[in-house]
Image (cartoon, rainbow over all chains, first blue to last red; front, side):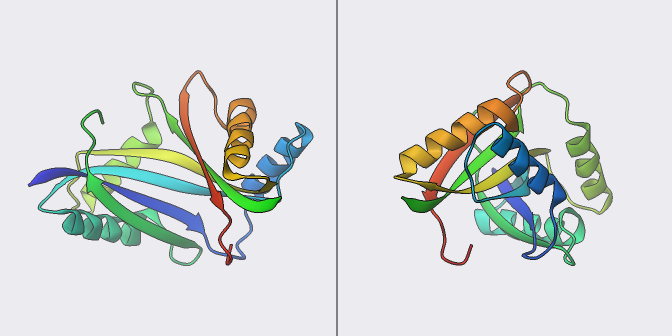
Length: 87
Length: 87
Protein backbone atom coordinates (compact mmCIF):
# COMPACT_ATOMS: atom_id res chain seq x y z
CA UNK A 1 0.00 0.00 0.00
CA UNK A 2 1.21 3.47 -0.81
CA UNK A 3 -0.18 6.98 -0.60
CA UNK A 4 -1.95 8.26 -3.69
CA UNK A 5 -3.79 11.45 -4.46
CA UNK A 6 -6.81 11.03 -6.68
CA UNK A 7 -8.26 14.09 -8.38
CA UNK A 8 -11.95 14.21 -9.27
CA UNK A 9 -13.10 17.11 -11.45
CA UNK A 10 -16.85 17.58 -11.53
CA UNK A 11 -18.32 19.91 -14.13
CA UNK A 12 -21.81 20.71 -15.33
CA UNK A 13 -22.91 18.94 -18.48
CA UNK A 14 -23.11 20.95 -21.68
CA UNK A 15 -26.40 22.83 -21.73
CA UNK A 16 -26.93 22.97 -17.97
CA UNK A 17 -27.24 26.61 -16.91
CA UNK A 18 -24.51 27.92 -14.62
CA UNK A 19 -25.63 31.30 -13.24
CA UNK A 20 -22.62 31.55 -10.92
CA UNK A 21 -20.20 31.26 -13.84
CA UNK A 22 -22.24 33.78 -15.83
CA UNK A 23 -22.10 36.26 -12.94
CA UNK A 24 -18.34 35.75 -12.57
CA UNK A 25 -17.87 36.32 -16.31
CA UNK A 26 -19.85 39.58 -16.16
CA UNK A 27 -17.88 40.77 -13.13
CA UNK A 28 -14.61 40.13 -15.00
CA UNK A 29 -15.94 42.04 -18.00
CA UNK A 30 -16.87 44.98 -15.78
CA UNK A 31 -13.27 44.98 -14.57
CA UNK A 32 -12.17 45.37 -18.21
CA UNK A 33 -11.17 41.78 -18.99
CA UNK A 34 -12.06 40.28 -22.36
CA UNK A 35 -13.15 36.65 -22.41
CA UNK A 36 -15.54 34.62 -24.52
CA UNK A 37 -16.67 32.06 -21.99
CA UNK A 38 -16.12 30.97 -18.41
CA UNK A 39 -17.01 27.57 -16.99
CA UNK A 40 -16.66 26.58 -13.37
CA UNK A 41 -15.97 23.14 -11.98
CA UNK A 42 -15.40 21.54 -8.59
CA UNK A 43 -12.19 19.74 -7.98
CA UNK A 44 -11.71 17.22 -5.17
CA UNK A 45 -8.25 16.04 -4.19
CA UNK A 46 -8.50 12.80 -2.25
CA UNK A 47 -5.57 11.27 -0.37
CA UNK A 48 -5.90 7.53 0.04
CA UNK A 49 -3.89 4.36 0.52
CA UNK A 50 -3.94 1.97 -2.43
CA UNK A 51 -1.87 -0.77 -4.03
CA UNK A 52 -1.40 1.16 -7.26
CA UNK A 53 -2.66 4.19 -9.16
CA UNK A 54 -5.28 2.14 -11.00
CA UNK A 55 -6.87 1.03 -7.72
CA UNK A 56 -6.78 4.62 -6.38
CA UNK A 57 -8.46 5.83 -9.55
CA UNK A 58 -11.12 3.13 -9.39
CA UNK A 59 -12.01 3.95 -5.80
CA UNK A 60 -12.15 7.68 -6.54
CA UNK A 61 -14.42 6.92 -9.48
CA UNK A 62 -16.80 5.05 -7.15
CA UNK A 63 -16.80 8.06 -4.80
CA UNK A 64 -17.67 10.34 -7.72
CA UNK A 65 -20.51 8.05 -8.77
CA UNK A 66 -21.91 7.61 -5.29
CA UNK A 67 -21.55 11.11 -3.88
CA UNK A 68 -19.38 13.75 -5.52
CA UNK A 69 -21.20 14.05 -8.83
CA UNK A 70 -24.88 14.10 -9.73
CA UNK A 71 -25.08 12.06 -12.95
CA UNK A 72 -28.18 13.95 -14.09
CA UNK A 73 -26.33 17.24 -14.44
CA UNK A 74 -22.62 16.50 -14.02
CA UNK A 75 -19.78 14.97 -15.98
CA UNK A 76 -16.65 13.99 -14.09
CA UNK A 77 -13.03 13.08 -14.73
CA UNK A 78 -10.80 11.08 -12.42
CA UNK A 79 -7.03 10.74 -12.29
CA UNK A 80 -4.61 9.44 -9.67
CA UNK A 81 -0.92 9.90 -8.96
CA UNK A 82 1.46 9.09 -6.11
CA UNK A 83 0.93 11.61 -3.32
CA UNK A 84 3.33 14.56 -3.33
CA UNK A 85 5.83 14.62 -0.46
CA UNK A 86 4.73 18.06 0.66
CA UNK A 87 0.98 17.40 0.57
CA UNK B 1 -5.06 35.93 -32.28
CA UNK B 2 -6.20 32.41 -31.52
CA UNK B 3 -8.57 30.77 -29.08
CA UNK B 4 -7.05 29.59 -25.81
CA UNK B 5 -8.51 28.02 -22.71
CA UNK B 6 -6.91 29.16 -19.47
CA UNK B 7 -7.48 27.10 -16.35
CA UNK B 8 -7.37 28.73 -12.93
CA UNK B 9 -7.42 26.41 -9.91
CA UNK B 10 -8.18 28.17 -6.64
CA UNK B 11 -7.61 26.28 -3.41
CA UNK B 12 -7.59 27.20 0.25
CA UNK B 13 -4.19 27.83 1.79
CA UNK B 14 -2.76 25.23 4.12
CA UNK B 15 -4.28 25.71 7.56
CA UNK B 16 -7.49 27.40 6.44
CA UNK B 17 -10.45 25.38 7.69
CA UNK B 18 -12.65 23.82 5.01
CA UNK B 19 -15.85 22.57 6.69
CA UNK B 20 -17.42 21.61 3.35
CA UNK B 21 -14.52 19.29 2.52
CA UNK B 22 -14.63 17.83 6.03
CA UNK B 23 -18.37 17.11 5.69
CA UNK B 24 -17.82 15.50 2.28
CA UNK B 25 -15.04 13.34 3.71
CA UNK B 26 -17.31 12.17 6.57
CA UNK B 27 -20.14 11.42 4.14
CA UNK B 28 -17.79 9.26 2.05
CA UNK B 29 -16.63 7.44 5.17
CA UNK B 30 -20.24 6.75 6.16
CA UNK B 31 -20.68 5.19 2.71
CA UNK B 32 -17.79 2.84 3.53
CA UNK B 33 -14.97 4.53 1.62
CA UNK B 34 -11.52 4.77 3.18
CA UNK B 35 -9.60 7.98 2.63
CA UNK B 36 -7.09 9.92 4.66
CA UNK B 37 -7.86 13.44 3.46
CA UNK B 38 -10.08 15.36 1.07
CA UNK B 39 -9.44 18.87 -0.19
CA UNK B 40 -11.76 20.84 -2.40
CA UNK B 41 -10.82 23.48 -4.95
CA UNK B 42 -12.58 25.67 -7.49
CA UNK B 43 -11.58 25.39 -11.07
CA UNK B 44 -12.37 28.06 -13.66
CA UNK B 45 -11.98 27.35 -17.37
CA UNK B 46 -11.77 30.60 -19.29
CA UNK B 47 -11.99 30.81 -23.09
CA UNK B 48 -10.24 33.86 -24.48
CA UNK B 49 -8.54 35.18 -27.59
CA UNK B 50 -4.80 35.76 -27.24
CA UNK B 51 -1.64 35.91 -29.34
CA UNK B 52 -0.06 32.97 -27.56
CA UNK B 53 -0.41 30.73 -24.52
CA UNK B 54 1.86 32.96 -22.44
CA UNK B 55 -0.42 35.96 -23.00
CA UNK B 56 -3.53 33.88 -22.20
CA UNK B 57 -1.88 32.68 -18.99
CA UNK B 58 -0.86 36.19 -17.99
CA UNK B 59 -4.38 37.54 -18.45
CA UNK B 60 -5.92 34.63 -16.54
CA UNK B 61 -3.45 35.30 -13.75
CA UNK B 62 -4.62 38.93 -13.55
CA UNK B 63 -8.23 37.69 -13.36
CA UNK B 64 -7.28 35.38 -10.50
CA UNK B 65 -5.55 38.22 -8.66
CA UNK B 66 -8.33 40.72 -9.18
CA UNK B 67 -11.41 38.57 -8.69
CA UNK B 68 -11.25 34.77 -8.69
CA UNK B 69 -9.00 34.25 -5.66
CA UNK B 70 -8.85 35.94 -2.29
CA UNK B 71 -5.10 36.23 -1.56
CA UNK B 72 -5.70 36.16 2.19
CA UNK B 73 -7.03 32.62 2.16
CA UNK B 74 -6.39 31.21 -1.33
CA UNK B 75 -3.52 29.94 -3.41
CA UNK B 76 -4.04 29.61 -7.14
CA UNK B 77 -2.47 27.96 -10.17
CA UNK B 78 -2.87 29.07 -13.77
CA UNK B 79 -2.23 27.24 -17.01
CA UNK B 80 -3.25 27.85 -20.62
CA UNK B 81 -3.55 25.71 -23.74
CA UNK B 82 -5.04 26.09 -27.21
CA UNK B 83 -8.82 25.69 -26.96
CA UNK B 84 -10.13 22.20 -27.71
CA UNK B 85 -12.15 21.94 -30.93
CA UNK B 86 -15.15 20.52 -29.12
CA UNK B 87 -15.20 23.06 -26.28
